[in-house]
Length: 180
Image (tube, rainbow, N blue to C red; front, side):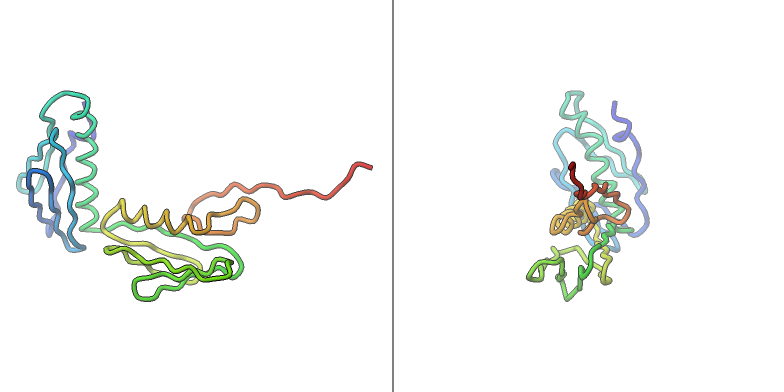
């Protein structure tokens, strides 16, 4: 029995839900999101609450029960409050600038790296810190991971792009010495 799938979802003021057979449209102050619904789960919308139930007890229905509930919950949270990821850029001369809907990185390469932001994502850039914001939790995490992959933090000096509180284990460099 799914503990996550059985929990009720509270619908805040200013959020409206429209349900089709295959999709649930969530509209709120921060935008609109569409959540795909699977055939094994049915959605019951009441005045200010929402619940999900399984149509059968097979393995696919049980696995999608909690997943669908959490996707809908994240969509409601996204259109009301939004999601954000914080990144740090560490290294001498490493920085980022925001222009229109793109980010320009200087990461120690011979050229600047231009990163176009997808629709629905905005970025706040100070020289060595970056905040990715948006309504879609999955898209915010995916964009942050792509930006991090431009220059992953290396283990010797720690230079690169990392999440705000990420711990990068550092290695000891080569030692000079000989056995004479």
